[in-house]
Image (cartoon, rainbow, N blue to C red):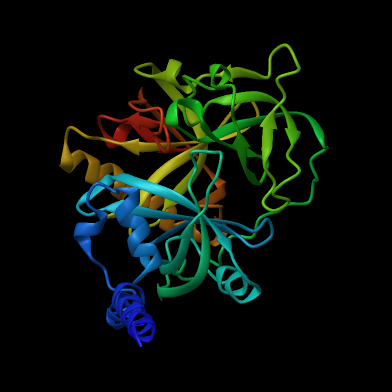
Length: 344
């Protein structure tokens, strides 16, 4: 009799400690945003949200061809504080949903953080819900990557640093139309890199994962990584640059359209945004002038990977180059007046 009593008590305790909390969690609204959880972007709190009601963020990049999906999660009221998470579908249904997402889509995901030797956090996604889609401006379709060239198993490439973080432990490189994660253990070669640096990289393709393709530095060669053109050396230099007109349309990350120019440097495109931080009225005149040039030539504009570009419109701009952070998305040209930019 006593044994049956203890069994009954054990069952009750199990219900109270395991099942009952799950019932309570299941009653919480799924995909509800709790700003206090995102304050400071602490992984423990984000992980709890991820496994319960869902983690909410925006798609940073998506390529169904290479099966590479990245989500950005931002701290409330702090645009510059964010984390990027690689998304790995747990099943075919989730992959099919991921294949439908586009850049800037607001999504809610449920899943678990994966143990990973890289500091880049990966999420095994159990389910994904698109809360709000973001559409390209009218007349433009989502960009389709051109991934026709296969990389050899081992070799070297010349590309541009797409992302650098964690003192060089996280490195992502743009090569042709690819955005490729690099697994780094020898950070002495990657410390000090800036986003936008043009580099020559000796690599080996990792066996796992097969998609998306991951590379690792080939440290058997004398110089695994060579900086061909360091963008930081451009800082505070007065330059007159020429390139195709680029437009970053207003989006959840941008309050208004931002104009830039695609400048060919060492055979690789860099995108210099055209900015005036000192005079709001003059900055408006610069944007208005560029908008008028853009609007008069929309027939020849096309979709780029994360922008719109007009390969038939060339502009010239004069000003000081501004690079203030190794993680700065694009170099800037500081322009005093609208007279310093013109269509050629």
